[in-house]
Length: 289
Image 1 (cartoon, rainbow, N blue to C red):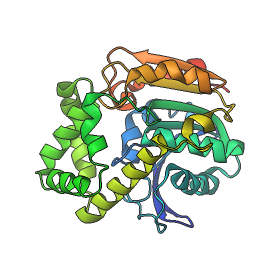
Image 2: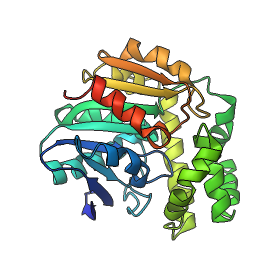
Image 3: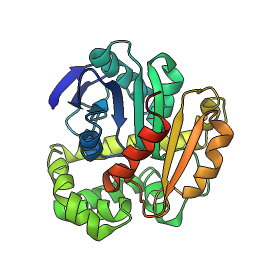
């Protein structure tokens, strides 16, 4: 596996790359507060099919924060386009995006169709004005002042408690999540050197993401989706506590070439919890495309 850093115009970005160079390239975009390591289980079982590139988004993992004050999904997409070109030239990539990373993937496909081969959305953070009650803490955290207090309290917890809380929120099966992913999350949390910067990046990115939910202009993500004609696969979890699976019914009204899969035992991070099912669905619906 290649583990290095790429200098872009807006940030220095840490990347992980796993796979064979003669296979189709893929870009895997993690969710809010995470890192490229989240894709390790899926990239390992796709290594014979894809050349998987999993960066840490600017401000997360080992990547530097954005030098601009704009934390919107479109800016993250622009940074990733530079990363893709540095690794794959002008080749088209299979996009994978989870949660906030799903919104970034959508903006990437909209801005850079020439670099996009297909898109696999896993519980994407796309506008839904009637969210699940269990997602309320995330939404409340976007309120100025309130979010800072919530983040300060959370980041003051012992690291093991932070990791367990993250698993409880994201996995359908908490016990299974702790058994197979607790050490992995802890290893990533321990990379956080400057806790205050982590707080600033998470809240700024969250607020910029939620702003897209209330965007009534042509740049609303659902409106952007109408211009995307790339093959798309949407994977939702019936036990997702953050993204309501009813969004699956909305997808085909906006994406011209979309397949939808609902995993009965899936939570918010099916690429971690059920990587074999994600691989199977991708190979069946989008590969080779």
